[in-house]
Each structure stands twice: as C-alpha cells, then as structure tokens.
Image (cartoon, rainbow, N blue to C red; front, top):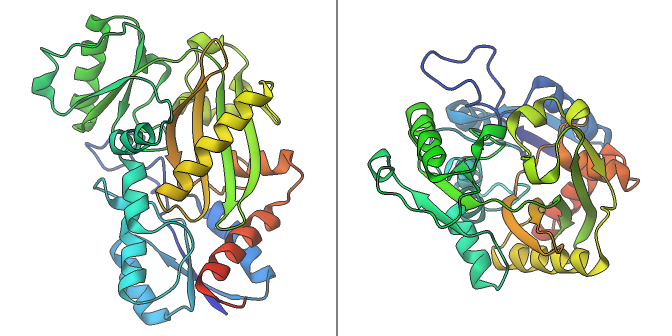
Length: 330
C-alpha cells in the first residue's frame, strides 16, 4: 500500500514578529523519519506529503492510498482540520479524528462545555475574548491559570501562567494579548497531581495507560506542565506508570475518557489531561487528538514504553485501528 505522511516541520528560524513558541506543535525531521522507517518496516511504500498549501500539490501528484496524519496546520482555530478536510474532499482515507472532532478539541472552551454536558468535572473557567474585556474582568478564584483558548502544546503556557490575584491575572492577560492577540481561557487552578491518559482504537479501545507527571523541583500545588518544563522534561519531571492514585480515581478518569472519546467521535488515538484535587477527584483539562509521536520525548510513546509497548507497536496499532475503520486490509 502507498501511504503518505502529512506533517508540519518546525522552521529553522521564527519569522520576525511571531512568538518564539508559535510553531511548538510542529514536528522535527527526526519524528517524520522515525514514522517513515516504521511504516516502511510494515511493508508499505511511503511518500512524504508535508503540510500547508504544498500538501495539496503533493497529495494530488502522489495519490496515496492512505494518509498517516500528524499535520497540525497553522493560523486558525480550525487548523488541525485542514489536512483531514482535503483528504475527505479527495476521498482518501486517513488516520486520526475528523475535522469536526479536531476543531472542537482545539477550542478549550467548547470542549469543556461538552465535558460538562456529559457530567464530567472540569475546573471553573471563563473566557476573555479580547483586550478590551480585561479591565472589567472578574473571576471568583484568586488562584487560577491563563491559557490561550485555541492552542495546544503549551503554546503561551509558562509556570508564570499560574497567578494568585485578580491584579496579577489582568497583568498576565495583557501580556498574552500583546504577544499572541488570541482569546484566553481563565481556569481555576487545581493543585493536585497531573494525570494523562492515552488510548488507541475505536470499537476495541486499548488504554495505553494512565501516567502521572510528577514535578521533581516543585510541589504539585506550584506546578504547571508548561512549555519550559516540557522542553527540559528529563530534569523537571518524573513520569510514573501506573500513577500513585486510588483505584476509584483511575476508574473515574477512564469513564470520563471513554465518554468524551465516543461522544466527540474521536478516532484511532488520543490523549486526555486531568488534574486531581486534594481528595483525588479528577478534573478534566483538555484533549489532544493528535498527540505527539516523537519516539523520545512525546508523552504517548513514553507512557506506552512504560506499559511494555515498543514504538513500532504504537504506530502499528494506530494504522490497524484506522484500516479497520475503513475496511482496509493492510
């Protein structure tokens, strides 16, 4: 089978006027090369399709039988849906979730509202739509976190994004609008353990496990899984599988994950993030339906390795899940 890989590469230089983390979700050549070699190892022919506008030219020229999609897109809150939309328009099957699910999960506000409608706890939150709203903004919790509403990979999220007062909140919000000019999500800070859950499959869903992201230098009550932490993860955090949490908490997280996965129509693989309160009650934070597949640094592979899986098994499971969904014999 001829399989095309869609992806976005991090540029060597950030264009003037852009924040230095604006391409944080993009992949390196190392990741693309690992995927290419792995898929070729299954006996498939592989073509590199890239992303953006050049993806359209390449997919029309190459005409692959299937697309393995890790492209994040750029520029809009629907960016993760760009490549899948083209694939659907051309009737070419692809891995991962469809444009609707990808766009819903990238918008943290909408995704949280869906979670609440399903009875899943999520921290109290409000949205600041534009810079003008900052002056009169009110929030009933002094300890909170500011995030970009429509971004992933901790773009815009630093340890300093955890604030302790309304005045500090407004100062940080002003700073983020000046830098990114995007709506903000303000969220009550939940001070317990950070837990992520990884799954692969569709009808027969496999949990790649639950993983605790435990800070080495800070208390959980001071910790955010922020950009500077992720870039220096070996020194900053310890990954614990299975997490040291009660069985009832693990089961509540798994129930929430399955509810969200099925309700939102997610497909093939995803990762779900939670924080626990002091009583080990889980609060849903967000979903990554295109979790990183860097064989050395991404959370999903790290979790899978600790569960006894190899990198090749991760990719094979994703492919087989997508093939089964389309009725393709791989």
